[in-house]
Image (cartoon, rainbow, N blue to C red; front, side):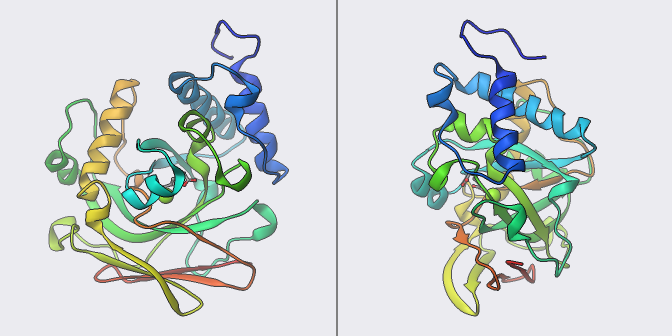
Length: 265
Ligand code: 0L1
Ligand code: MG
């Protein structure tokens, strides 16, 4: 049920609008314009309600994603604050599986350093060191983002309510002990159809991807939520995202974490 607020609209209406855009694969204007007064706290409530609707429809929460953790992403989107959102099993692309463009609006792909948690992480007061100690495996991965907003134009409450543009993601086949590599120096090179278009190291993600993980644990902790053992955590796009076109392949070549790729199908 929608949380009460002093406005003429309800959070259920916000969620309806966003889920309709997603299922009808139709971009739309910002929800902050349609629902004046929608602030960050309400947007996180809408995000929770949106994911509860997906769970009620049969999807399973399998982890968390961070968004806007790198300067490249923050500058591109014009928002200087990181955010958290949810991953479900319906978002997973197995190795070699295409991102089916008919299911999406205007997908873009970005490289991600991905953690799998070996134990629960409960904020607040989680440090990067403590966060890294809870990680059992690190992967190279990619995220396919698909904002429900026209031209990816949104404010922070818009993108939070929209579950941070979450759509699809995939992991590489190499799982490493996080202590066996230097995540700050780990480089990802982004290629579109064989041509290099961007590159960054793990330092781009809050100085160290474990800082992003700590941030997620502490943010969720403030909202009474916990990162569970076994969950996947996408630490945020390392570079700006690139459009995924039909028949085109975006590959990410990590220095130690292997190569992951996705094609537009
Ligand atoms: O659409 C977006 O760029 C917002 C989500 C950010 C995803 C990320 O930074 O990993
Ligand atoms: Mg991302």
